[in-house]
Image 1: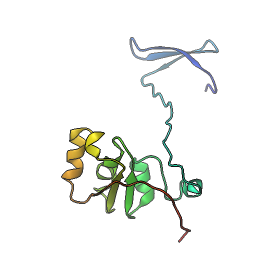
Image 2 (image 1 turned 60 degrees about the vertical axis):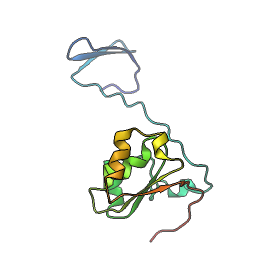
Image 3 (image 1 turned 45 degrees about the horizontal axis):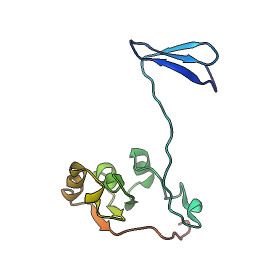
Length: 138
């Protein structure tokens, strides 16, 4: 196993793909996953860090949906983020809500808007912005 090497070349002309690493070794693989990370636009809230991973998440994937169990969920964001409750949790037993600072028609593709509008389980809240968080453990 290689640890902490840099891929210097990726050859995808044929399978298996070939990755050349800086130590001179060539690794062959049928699949290459490039996990380059993500940078989240976190709101500027004083005690936000206290709640990260304790009910506040920066992804709206199947994993976060599992962490929320059957609790109500709200997703606040711009771009395509307000559609996530419908895409990810509306088919579960949660009551999804979506919040957006601006009208989503300005930032989201028509098919995503249609998914929200056609799902009666989603309650959309426009003009929504998180300005503070407070609470404790149950």
